[in-house]
Length: 305
Ligand SMILES: NC(=O)C1=CN([C@@H]2O[C@H](COP(=O)(O)OP(=O)(O)OC[C@H]3O[C@@H](n4cnc5c(N)ncnc54)[C@H](OP(=O)(O)O)[C@@H]3O)[C@@H](O)[C@H]2O)C=CC1
Ligand SMILES: CC(C)(CO)C(=O)C(=O)O
Image (cartoon, rainbow, N blue to C red):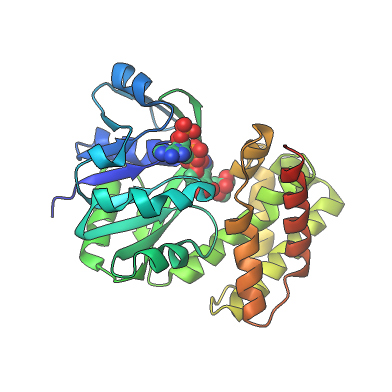
C-alpha cells in the first residue's frame, strides 16, 4: 500500500521522522511555522547520529489549507498548541485518513476524539532525543524508535504500513495493541525526569547522581506504576531500577520540558502531569508526589511573565 504523509508541526520530532520518510522516497508534506521561507529556499537539514543528510526539495507549506489530503497525518506539535487542530486538520484529511499524535503525555487522543469522533486516531511514543537547533535544521542525538497504537477506529493495515515505511526509512517502529499501556510506560520516564529537571534546574545525570533526588525520581516512578495499574495499564515495578541505572549511564540530558523552560516556552504540564493526575484520581488513586511537582511547574511557568 502506498501512503502519503502529512506532518503538522515540523520541529524536532516532525522534522526527524518526516525527514527520514522523505529521504526514503515517500511523499511527505510538511507544515512549517516560522521556518517556512527558509526551508522553501534552503531545504531541511537533519544531523543524525546515524548520518547527516540535506533534503533540498521539500514539500513545504505554511498553511494547512494549501496541503494535499494525506493518508497519514503525524501531529508533532507541542501539546500546548493542540487547540489549533480543530481548524487545521479537516483540510488535510480524507475520510480514511489516520491521524497519529506523536506527542508526550496522556489524554491527548481522548481530547482530539471529542472533536473528531469519526476519525481514525492513533498515538505515537517517540523514544528519541532530538531538537531543532536552527531554522530548518534538526539535530538527532540518540535513540529514535517509535511505538504506535490505535485509540479509536483502528485501521491496522495502515498502521502496519506506516511501521514498514518507517523501518524501510531506517527508523525502528513497532505497533502495539494497548496504547494506554504504552503511554503510561513512557510516562514512567517523563514524569520523574521532565518536570524534576525543571524544578531542580538540573540535567538527568545530576538527578540520578544525588541520593536525595534519586530517591525522588524513584518515588515518582513507583507512583506512576501504581497510577497506571489503577488506570488499567498493567505496568510493573521491575523496570524502575534498570531505568534509573540506564539514565545514570546516559550522557547528561535535558528533556524536552527542560529545553522549553530554558527557552521560556510553554511547558507541556497539562499532558505530562495534569492529565495523568486527573485520570488516576478518577480511578481512585491520588498521585501525591506527582501533583506536587505539577503545582511547582505551574508556579514556575507563571514566573515567565
Ligand atoms: N524533542 C524530543 O526529543 C522529544 C519530543 N517528544 C514530544 O514530541 C512532541 C513534539 O515536540 P518537539 O518536536 O520537540 O517540539 P518542537 O517545538 O521542536 O516542534 C513543534 C513544531 O511545531 C511548530 N508549530 C507551532 N505552532 C504551529 C502552528 N500554529 N502551525 C504550524 N506549526 C506550528 C513549531 O514551529 P517553530 O519551528 O516556529 O517553533 C515547531 O517547529 C512533544 O509532545 C514532545 O514532548 C517526545 C520525545 C522526544
Ligand atoms: C524520553 C525523552 C527524553 C526522549 O525520548 C523524552 O521524551 C523527552 O525529552 O521529553
